[in-house]
Length: 266
Image (cartoon, rainbow, N blue to C red; front, side, top):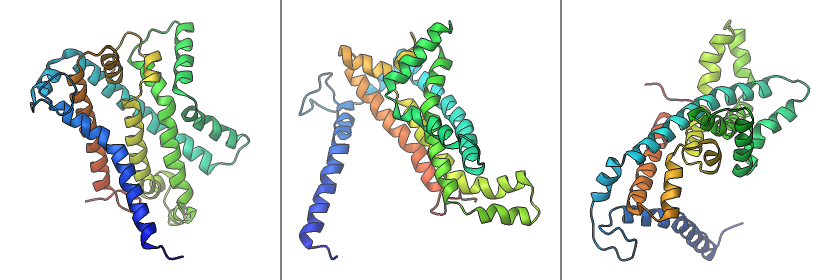
């Protein structure tokens, strides 16, 4: 069926509207980060980089930022390990309850964050576990595992089993086959899963609220500052920094990968 010119124009206009809906609010925040006034109004009073220095000198922001980074990295590492092992087990082996296990692994991403957070909060209080970095990591790892699991198992299902069989027929043992065949094939799935898992962990608010205790992660600091109406210029600067730091690993991953799904080797 041939598309008419009116259809193409309508699709193009709809695409533009969607992009504007997604990115105009982000652009406004970026502009406000350079606003010389601490009052968010339009048009802005003037341009300045003062708030960037003010945010950097704020020890509370730096502590919250570092805590979020550590929690995200550790949760992502745990998710990469457990999510990959679970995906290989479900994909490679046939056993009773396999589908049930797959459902249980994926379930946390479908549950509302407030339920997950309250459940962990009750567990930690019941067990007498003090809230710390590790309680945040445990809460975040539950949904980060799902992201890695889905990415890796989807890649495994698209991979021909003949590649592994050919490697074994040529005399490679299990470790050699994994290193030279399986790992390169799933490498980009691991990279994508790790990046997305870290991004979700980094900006998670609800689960963090119930597992952080008195600690202040970056999302909690942003939420509290907006709710109380304090440090709004610094909030805009922090949001801009988060956007930039989120783009860096995505760009690096794009340069390292190609359409074949195998990491490039230079």
